[in-house]
Structure formats: C-alpha cells, structure tokens
Amino acid sequence: MELNQKLCVAYAADDHYAKFLGISMLSMFQSNKDFKEIVVFILDCGMKDPNKEKLRSIAKEFKREIHFMSMAAAVAGLELNMGPRKISIASYARLFLSSIIPDSYDRILYLDCDTIIRDKLMDFWTVDLEGYLVAGVRDTVDSFFLKKIGMRPDEYYVNAGTILINLNSWRKEGLEKKFIDFIRKHNGNVPHHDQGTINGVCRNRKRIVSPRFNATANIYSFTAKTIKRIYFLDSFYTQEELDEAKRNPAIIHFTTGLVGRPWEENCTHPMQAEYLKAAKVSPWKEEPLQRDTRKFSVKLFSSFYRHVPLFVSENVYRFLSLLTHVGE
Image 1: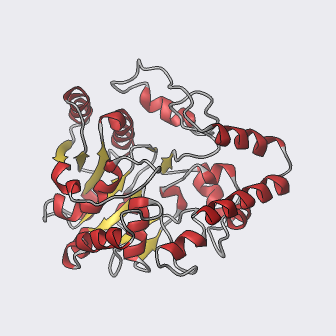
Image 2: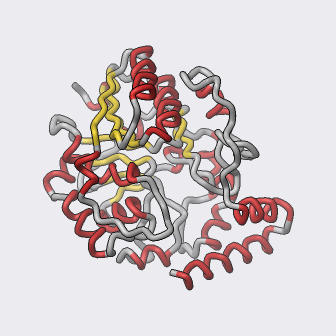
C-alpha cells in the first residue's frame, strides 16, 4: 500500500497513562480520516484489561487496527540508575521499536500520550527519511545537556515525544544495541533519559520539521528570542515559525511547563480546550480534572513569571538553569 494511504503509529503507556493515550488516539482518528488505514501499536508497559477494552472500543468506533505489544521482556534488561529522577519505564519502550514492530513496516510515527492531534499528519508522515534516522521538532534543551551526551552545540536536539522513525535504518544499523550501549556508557543515567539516548546516538542524522508537529508548552510561554536566551541556544526556530505553530498546531504536546497539564486543575494552557473536547467524547468523559501536581517551586515561578517584567523573569530563569548545571 502506498505511503500516503496507511499511517502506522506507536504509543507507550502503563495503566496510569492509558487514559491519556486513549484521548490522544481518539483525536488522531478524528483528524486523520483521509488515511485508508491507520494501524496503532501500543507498547504495553503494564496496562490492565479495563483500559485495554476502552482503547479497543475507540479503535472499533473508527474502524482502525490496534495491537498491544508487551514490553516486559524488552525493558527487563535495561540497567537504569536514575537516582531521585523517577520516570516511567514506558518512556524507554520507544528504543525497542525496530525489534517490536513487524519488518513489513519501514517507518513509524511515535507519539507521547500527552498529545492531542488536531490536524492531518500527512505532511509529517511522508517526510523524506533518506539518510536520516529520525525526523522531529527541535527541543528547548540547552547546550550544557548536549555536551553531556557527546553532542556539539551546533547539532540539533529533537523532542522525542513526536518523532518519525526510520525503522529500516534502525534495523540495518543495529540502533537498539547502540541505545543499550549508550545507556551503559552513562551508567544508566542519561540526561533526559530515552530522549537523550536517541539524540546522542542519532547525532546529526535527525531531520528537523516544523514546530507545528510538536507544539510544546514552552512555545506558548516564551518567545523565540527568550527561548534562545534562557536555554543558552545559538539558534532556534524563528518567531514567525513559532507563531504559525501556535495558530495552527497539528500536534499539541502538553509537556510540563509553566502552564500546567490540561487534565489538571489550575491549567492555564491556551489550548486546554482541545484536550477537553477530545476527552468529552472518550470513554473517560465522566472523570473530573485531577489535582495540580506541579511542584510548589514551579507554581511559584509560574506566578512570578506572569507578574514581573520579562527581563527580570528571564534572568531569574537563566540563574536557576546555571544552578542546575552546577548541581549536575
């Protein structure tokens, strides 16, 4: 089947994130009816049957395929040493896609559960991957962390929450083993975990796409100029590119940030309504908003950022970043 007729997508989640996965998947089905086929592979990191049935009901409603792939064996051998930085093992599942997904698929679009898809994905899905291992959107990660994973400051770093993966190249070049070796090299504690691993291994073979395919929380909080300043970046997207992404995002990625999560109380994200709209027609429509789980320091800075002059909040943010670097 031609590339523009069949979309192949992967999510990873445990039972806690099954709800958000389902709402994201539903929004994708709603926005991408032009694809003749959509196949969804769910990397199951401990999902219980009631939530699996709800996910199957969504796929059935839209007449789409869904497959659950147990990740218990794949992630069992990972030697992780993350200290106090707790992160779900599901986050590492994407590293094993080349061996989990059948060989008949030569590419796959990986989506984090905290996304809402509000436009067609065709332009992203059909990006030319010749010579590239992944395609994705640049992230707001400063040069300090690039150096820690062996990257140069002038190399692009992508957010792994929405990435198009060249499965053929991952298989041929043994990326899975390279990922494991990279994690071991960093004693099981890679900065930014699986995302840092993907960036550190793929290096300069990452194709950069429009930020509208991964509109993260930071572009709604900061200007392009501010992002470059507070993250110590030499370059980033232009303000025009960020403005277009905010006006017409294809994928909204509700990353942690100053605006909060759309399923929690006190959220100030300007696109929260997009999440609530999808949630209201999902099997979880009766569930209320959850309590605000942001750390007190994040809440405090969020309020501080909204009420003080920009140059003051920028310099405070930069100072806090420097303190983090010293701690590292």
